[in-house]
Image (cartoon, rainbow, N blue to C red; front, top):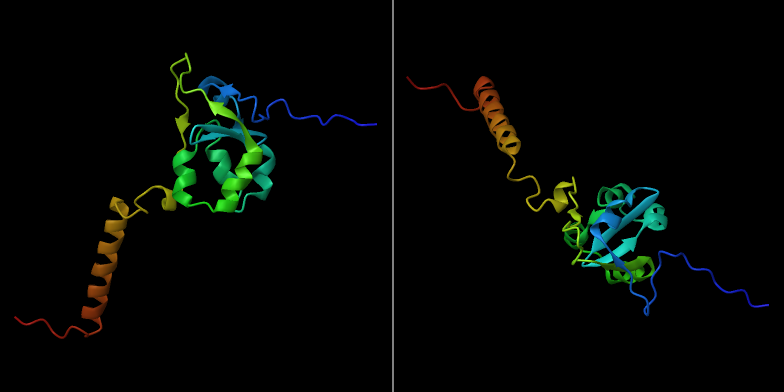
Length: 149
């Protein structure tokens, strides 16, 4: 007896390309229902969360939105890109009549922010404090010699 394989209704095949609107995408923004867009394609990564080498939190941060920038910033391997094919559920409907675009992911990790924290005023303040502290220590320990008057 041949039993037909039951596919998830969300999964797309090559012949049936499902169009997913921003409104629909936004509803799938939780760890137990996690979809996002990468390069115009919508992926359901819910079942992949426990297997993601970088942890599930980074994927959940982008849930319901556009993860293209975060995905590309990390520099994923060819193997990772091949794995994505099994998670594809459709194309993002960029002509969505609601006028809504998917929210861009907002990764909170310095590695994906583009400036690695170097532009932060706090970094400059911390560096200045370290320099002042070292100068004070050097003067107090006699390393700089006595000031000339």
